[in-house]
Image 1 (cartoon, rainbow, N blue to C red):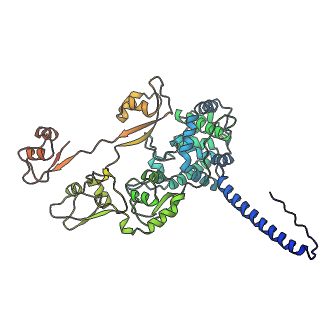
Image 2 (spheres, one colour):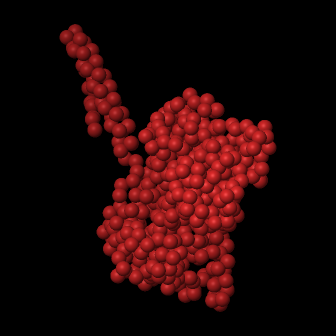
Length: 497
């Protein structure tokens, strides 16, 4: 800090010039100090962005019931597994600013921001074996009740903004339903409000204060509540528990941008200057290769890429944002033939064109997603220049399985058709570690590959089809036992493998 004293001097003939020079020097010095301080303050304001954990601590307001043995057990586990809390913290980074902001708007306790840590490890693509999805692990029926759209194009349960809004509304409702008891609200969020209401009724407890720890709740819920409270306690007092949390600045990670129309997600990623993976991490609600063809036309874009994205998007005409082929149905066409021609699927064509049956009429137009007409600004990789493949679901997708009471590895192998070796590798386990109820396991579930088919043409025989498709007549006969090889009919479908 600079302190400058201006001394008033009585001017005389010799001092007047000196005074003018002195005043000029002082003014110049003050300007330099002002500029330096301005730069320093501007720089420090960026560097001194609050830590997300400090903001969260200010919002934690519940009793974490640390005298309960179950909570103490969970605290000891968390403290002895620092990689667990570090992983949760890192995975929350893109989303926790938004979640905390929405919680603060509603004046809800900060502990709610930890629910996605328990439910999904802050992974918006997490699925439970029961069908729950997204950061907040909402079931399909619950999502519908909360107003989340779920269709072929989009699943609002996996979206960031809408799912957070729905989950917080639901938690606020449960809090009110259970007479202001947040622990009961959390338990109901995990096991269902009907289940908890029935358990409370059967317990014989009455009045405003229900003792959760004496209730006969499901085993998963009995593990869920202590883990949530223990996590809140450790984050609130990291020094006490000797836990170091990664530095995450409390600044917006993304911004919502109105894009005005449907767009290919790959193209949108290139316009933003980010990878496709980085884009869908912020927009996990989209089920397909493009945004939904209806309002609202919005994307979440990393905050530091919004200006570039908006500028680049403005230069792309709406008609060039999605690649389509408009096919006119010819005589003899059917959806199977059209799908094969464009290397897509019948169901996809039906969904896109809102067709209720497989029948089409001559002269009718159908829209086909075209992989053969990529946008000019998208550079093709060597793999993408190969012949297009059918637009099918991913070969693998992630499932978060919650272990049930007395469940075994062999049951999981049978349920998901995976090997014990894979289950152990995915979860860093060994056969000496028994499964316990409420444990979360990662399972990479495989989709069965689609069957390759061939549409018989006029003049085809089994031998010419086998020769053309690099297979054997005997193989085709085994795959198509009900087909009379000597009487093939045009339009008949054969399995190829």
